[in-house]
Length: 365
Image 1 (cartoon, rainbow, N blue to C red):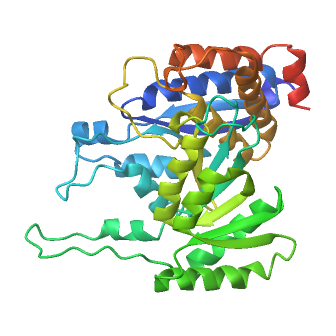
Image 2 (cartoon, rainbow, N blue to C red):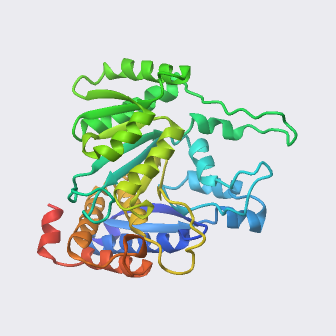
């Protein structure tokens, strides 16, 4: 296919705050290497200022004109947002990424967890690929729903409400069942149905939707037990589905099993839009030093290519390059015990993508 007839994708870039611009730069570098490898895909990037830094400049972390442009984009690739010292009068941090989920109705939060090297995680005896599961997190309701409520500074108490709607739960569960059907066929519901009525309701809807997917095996765990089993035996899990706050917490625990937040990609998907971003925060203490691990952002870009119609070949290339790098190189970023710089890791992945390495080529076929 000639470049002029290649499939073109418009990607909105939101580098954000802290280390966000540094890791986004490496994801773009890798996507350019995908272009060099595949003549059927071309990317058009457009960068927007969103986050705590934008709030300091304009008074709005997500300007309305920017949001309208984002709504027109093919996909959104986000670095990290928020700074600890930049907060709303309520005391909460700026979180325009959460606002994007709500306004674009990105109800399906997908957090893959994959061990690329036995030395990356704290658990001994696990080889590469033996920890391999996905957390599917509801991203528009749950306990996060209360963040839109205000309170008076002199209020005698403050309450957060955990919202579960039938429509929200049904669409989440169907997405999770479909994902489990495409993997190893096991879906685990995590809730607190023994104590919270909202969670008992959540489980009841799960059981109703399960009837539609008889080929998928199911299990149900309370969130405290699930935290235990994730550490004791992460091999048991395939796809996990849970409420917003539980998913937020367990995603970080799961990332710790495979090397930390620098190895944790994520996506928030809706029926028409999607945002792809590393699961880590802005880490302002690391910003500007060139030592952040960009792997999570690079793998989030691969998730983006899986979502974009006709770009899945590029996703396979990226994951194969990451797998090959960690299997053959002793170089690591600081969070994994090495000295490799952010840009150097991006270079290594990009070089593999354009190489003729026989083992790499075997991974993508």
